[in-house]
Length: 173
Image 1 (cartoon, one colour):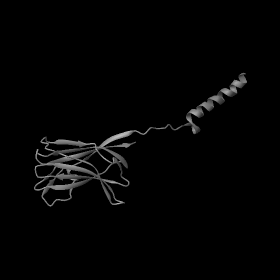
Image 2: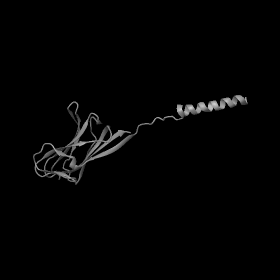
Image 3: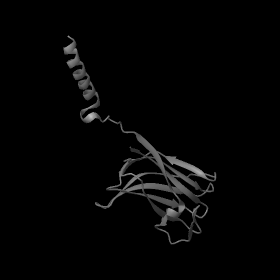
Image 4: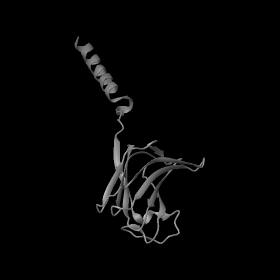
């Protein structure tokens, strides 16, 4: 019985270790993907005029019309290829009389498509800055290998100011 024990115990121990650790002495454990939530800040200086011939001011701290109204656009980029848009926050001032509108568009250069994903606007927000948010987007998924993301900003008159936009997104790590 001792000779048999001396033979079987190391053999069973070896099989147990190999089964637990896997072949080659080390095994890979399955890792569950985790969702990371992050933000991208789009400053006023990122916006470029789209449909205005009026005078405007774009600085590092604010964007405003000197006269008339105007539309501005800014690209949004992410550090990973695939993201889900969760929320957009607009920091603006509309003096309680003007209006600032913001829309998110997804572009597909390969097809020439341009799709509205969501938007928001200020309404008589006399707070300075007023903070507006939206979480209503469709579709939420943006794959930067095939899509671009653009913010379009509309300023109604010289009484409004834009301080920036925060895009909250998530991705699987």
